[in-house]
Image (cartoon, rainbow, N blue to C red):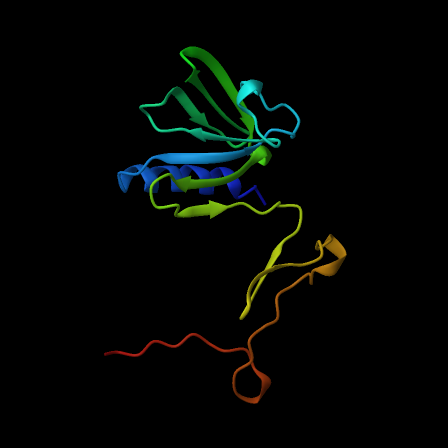
Amino acid sequence: MKARRPYLMRALYEWILDSEEIPNILVDTEREDVIVPREFVKDGQIVLNISPDAVRGLSITDDYLMCEGRFSGRSFEVILPMASIRAIYCRGSGQGLVFEDEDYPLDITSEGLTSISPVGPNDLDDEPPTPKGRKGRPNKPSLKLV
């Protein structure tokens, strides 16, 4: 399956703008291929305002977020691999989403999301179980005139 992060990034970005908020992202600058102005990095992270007023040429692809921003009056190209983006949120309300690493699938339990072991091809059944109806027979579709 494709990674969820770029799809969630695009959707949340639109939601934040539609809510008339300012979209900020938290970036892990220790990741490979991150291009940001290093003088603004603190503790291996940087927070960027990616609103249309703050950046030009914003592109959120399946692999990268790219744009041009201004830092202390100087124009700078920003290139962020999707894996480097740790969160997207509204500056004002703080609402948004923190991304988990996608290396491990998540298990939704009554206690919330928890990380589980990776699933390999040998762990999956070849065919889904057939639902059983009366007397062990598969359910037949039925329509009822209302």
